[in-house]
Length: 134
Length: 133
Image (cartoon, rainbow over all chains, first blue to last red; front, side):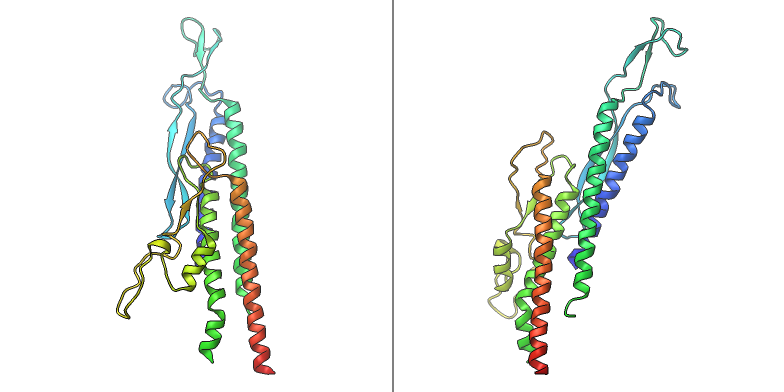
C-alpha cells in the first residue's frame, strides 16, 4: 500500500526539519556565548540533508546526514573590560549570524508545515479509501 | 460473473494504484525541498496507465511476457518510468524542487485519487442495482 509510504516520507522530512530547527535554536541561544565547555567561543552548527530511498519504494525520504560546525571566523568585538579580551582588547564572539539563523528558522518552519499538510492529505485519502463501496 | 466484475474494476484499480504511487513520489519531492543536489522526479501518468492496463510493468524498461513460463521481473511499476523535472529557476545548491509546482501537482493528484474512488463507488452501485433489480 503505497499511500502508507507517504507517511514515512513526510515523517522523515518532519524529523529532519525538526533537527534543523533544533540547530537554529541552539545557534540563536548561543549567539553571545563567548566560552563553551572547551573555553573556545561557540561555533554555529548547520545540518546537512541527504535524500534516502524508503524501503525500495519510489518516493525518497530525507535525513540529516551530518551536523557540521561553521568554519568561518568569529566576530571580533572591542571590549577591553571583558575578562576574555585579548591583549589588544578584542573579544572573539561566536560566528553565529542572527539574520541567517532567522531566515533558516522561517524556511524550516514552512517546510515542516508543508510536510504536515502532506501527511494530512494522505490521511484523508486513506480514510476515503476505507469507506470505498459504501 | 465474478470475472466480469473483476474486469469492470480492473482499469480503475490500475489507475488508483498509479495515483497512490505518484502521490508518494510527489511527497518525496516535497520532503526533499531543502536537500542539496536533489532532483525532483515524476512520471507520465497517462503512459504509465496505458502500460499498466496492457499488463506491462516497469514502463519503457519493462519485460514483455511472451510465454507462460516467463518471469515478470522485479521492477516496480513506476520506478523505471521515473523522469526528472526540468526546473524553471535553477537554485545554487543544485536542487530542482519547485515548491509551487510540487504542491499544485500533489493537490491535483489527491483530487484525482478521490475521483478514482468515486468512480469505483459508482461502479459498485451500478453492479449492486443490477443484482438487486
